Amino acid sequence: GLLVLIYGQEFDFTSTAYQLKSPYIHFEKGNGETVHMHAANVTMGFLFGTLKIGLDDKCFTFPDRRTFCTNDKYTLKFFVNHHQVPDMKDYVFKEQDRLLISYGNENDTQINDQLTRVNGLKLIT
Image (cartoon, rainbow, N blue to C red):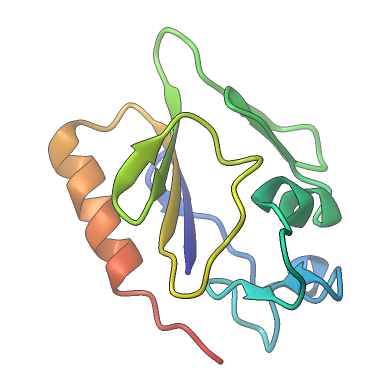
């Protein structure tokens, strides 16, 4: 499962623009929370690349050139199964993983609420 929150708002991967862009790793069936992986060693950076979304340890960049980069007010944060990690670009998704990408200035309580939302994702098979 994957949840991307920007300023606390969920990014919607259900649009056809984000569905089935690669046979190796993708969203499908109109679901924007379940990542389906059909090949070994496919990274999250590869997934986002197929969606034309840039991802590194500091910035999240959308095709329309909107960028969300760590600065003095806001931070880009990554969590894998509730553990914060410095980057997600080279992370290889594993079955039943719960991933959170969060951009904003959330406090610990708000991050915990976001992580709880990740646990509640309705994954499809």
